[in-house]
Amino acid sequence: MKIGDALKRASYILRKAGVETPVTDSQLILSHILHIPRWKLITEREKELSKSILDYYFILIKKRSEGVPVAYLTGKKYFYGLEFEVEEGVLIPRPETEILVEEVLKRIPKDRHFHGLEIGVGSGIISISLLKHRPKLKMTAVDISDKALEITAKNAIKHGVVDRLILIKSNLFEKIPKNQKFDFIVSNPPYISEEEYGKLSREVKKEPVEALIAGKEGIEFYEKIINEGISFLKEDGFFAFEIGYNQCEKVSKLLKEKGFHTICKKDLQNLDRVIIGEKR
Ligand SMILES: C[S@@+](CC[C@H](N)C(=O)[O-])C[C@H]1O[C@@H](n2cnc3c(N)ncnc32)[C@H](O)[C@@H]1O
Image (cartoon, rainbow, N blue to C red):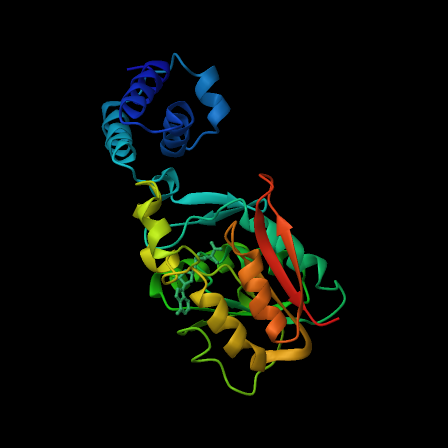
């Protein structure tokens, strides 16, 4: 079978299975298997594929039709201009999280030796992007999941920042030395309420539930991170969180109660996505 015909058949299978982006997904999966960029699939439409490649391709297409996200099939996802490894068991990086990275970078002077803390590092996208853009920055990052720490370590090595990243397996602040102080605490914590989780797509439900759900209201983690985190922040330190579209007010209230000024930032869909709490 030729590349063009394989793509046509795969798109048809995905469309019939209700996948929203059948053409893109069938191209992404084939370009991953062939180790060639997507555009080359178009210029090489007439090239014949071997039986073993075709068999493997249609195994992955079947998995995709069953709802497995493309990033878990290809094992990679781009974030903030960098390629990250991802695997089942860690949250797939979302483009909205780039806004959080932007906002934190604005607050880290290039010439200062800041030390930041990330709670819930996942695949490492936030800490590693920050470290790549601020050569004097050091990060401590925690996660409760072994898989997340393993993938973050791989990504930190891949991007050459492993010497400035301390990884700790910890339930929130539990394993962080009590006397340690940070310039900022950043987190994209689980923030989906139990009720909202029920409405999510089958794709999202293939991702680890402990990376998504945060109690009845969805704000459990913000409460804990703010209340416990305050003793780990320097006097002029700041908090930076990704938030759900309807959480600006609730999280802002939590921060204000602790004496922080707050600012919420919107994403490209004009929905609240990030909150910063700082002492001015
Ligand atoms: C929404 S994901 C964010 C992952 C990554 N930072 C990102 O932005 O893609 C939340 C992360 O918090 C971790 N997590 C959940 N509960 C935790 C806890 N009690 N202590 C530390 N990490 C936790 C999950 O394992 C998951 O990796």
